[in-house]
Amino acid sequence: MARDNDITFHTRKWVRPEDLNANGTLFGGSLLRWIDEEAAIYAIVQLGNGNAVTKYMSEINFVSSAQQGDLVEMGLTATAFGRTSLTMRAEVRNMFTRQSILTIEKIVFVNLGEDGLPAPHGYTEITYDRDRVPREHLHRIQDSAPGMA
Image 1 (tube, rainbow, N blue to C red):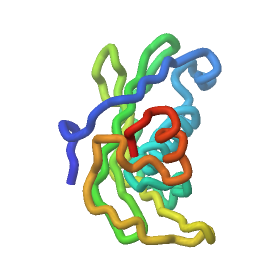
Image 2: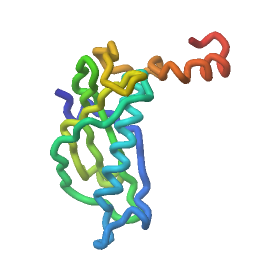
Image 3: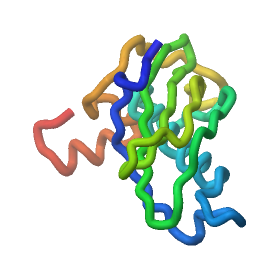
């Protein structure tokens, strides 16, 4: 299973006034929306399919918060590939203090076929390249960069 040192932090968000709760700290709902969006993007890249949906999130452990003006970093890593699913772990931390804000040990996305039902994706390991761009976008890559497939 992946641990903190296996996660690469790629996405950063700036905590703005509209992201705050009544206590003046980062609203958990805003943070969960950011994580779900980032997890969806990660699943699309890993599965090569724009039709992947959130199936499950395990216990969410908020360990600290952030204030207006803070920058938070979100990191995800794949921990398991199922036949039709991808499981990942999430960590969010304050970029300035490096203090953990929250962890989610298990987020599961399901790969869907054209019929909207779970479909095998055929992958077993993480990719760090952009080689799994969803098929429906391949023509845009080929048109903009001759010689790329």
